Amino acid sequence: MTDTTRAEPPGSAKRTTRDLTRAAVSGWLGTAMEFMDFQLYSLAAAIVFNKIFFPDVSPAIGLIAAMATYGVGYVARLAGAVYFGRMGDRIGRKKVLYLTILLMGASTTLIGALPTYATIGILAPVLLVVLRLIQGFGAGAEIAGATVMLAEYAPAKRRGLISSLVSLGTNSGTLAASGLWAILLAVLSEEQLLSWGWRLPFLLSFALMIFAVWLRGNLKESPVFEERADVVDGVAMSREEVETALDNASLEEKREGVLEAGIRQRKGRAFFLSLGLRFGQAGNSGLIQTFLVGYIATNLDAGRAVPTDAILYGSLLGFVTVPVVGLLGDRFGRRPMYVALTLLTMVLAFPMMLLITSGNTAALMLGMVLALNIGVLGLFSLESVTMAELFGSRTRFTQLALSKEIGGILATAVGPVIAASLTAVTGSWWPIAAMLVVYSLITLTAALLAPETRGRDLVRLEDAA
Image (cartoon, rainbow, N blue to C red; front, side):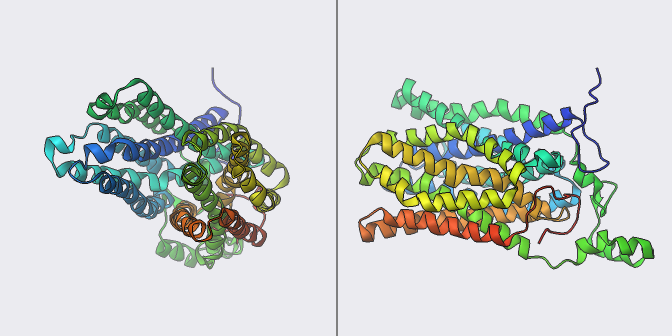
């Protein structure tokens, strides 16, 4: 039977509800794969890679080397954001998302097939770094591309809810990777883990990659991309071609000003607003999901399982938080929700840290769960749609990918280091709460300066600011 139900696309390039569902599953699955791949690698780097790829150095140096190979992926992400972002704005979202999922999945699978240092010597860690670079190169545009695709597919009245599925992918991937490693650590001996067990999570990702590649191969192009005034035969015109088209346009066409607005708008304001929105979410994430886990285990005499369990429970609650925030954003607007969540994080920062440092396990978990859902996951849900709405369709993919990666690197790379230094100097937890306030204040300021973007026509070529 033919599916005739319409998903209320933004213009004449109609898509069925089935098309929208396929796009939603594709966006969720790609983001889940990205975060699963990176979490699989980060856990492997912490648990086994120092022993199987860097065995001829001290354990401490081996761990540093393993973590360094983890870090190079973030350098590659920025390069991927530039390369694939520009490609996605030029030839379409679908083609780029097909390539990014293929690169991520293939490199992750091949990591599981790598020979170890004992087999081929120094070439083993070299190949590991190469695959990590390829993985990061693809991942640099994956979440941005999935965000753009879902936002451009979704009906305007439900754009926040549908775009939030990208944020749910982060929870799904992290939980899947953590679960796989938990099972391996529970059922395998150390000898089994080091000889062959560590390969299983990476090799199992191959099946997921095949499904994701098939799904994206059958996905239709974004209706917004097809409707763009600067796209001819599926390819966006260059700036020179647009200028020529403007010179040859009739007076009536010039009055409409669609092409002119997109090509001659002064860029920059929307990008820096987007950076500000990203900064709070990424900075809070680095503090809560990375720094606090180690701080609690080291400074508060709590077992390592306590903070990791708290993150697990918080992530599970996120399956409710994320879509609810998306719905509320559709109902009340993006700015009011940003103001509410950032102010709530700022007001609760010190009380949440008091709970976390109280010495009571239940209070600690409550504080972590609240911090994660209010200061990280709730903001991530809003970020998924607001950043897409801020940018014009001509450069949406590129600007969104760059603002996500640059904002993430600046906030998460520096934040935990500053927090570690301040807590060491003061001997107290209050700098962590203060940093949560500062990060949230940056995002609050950006939200107040940004225009309300709910319901914006995403086909427009110019930025919203």
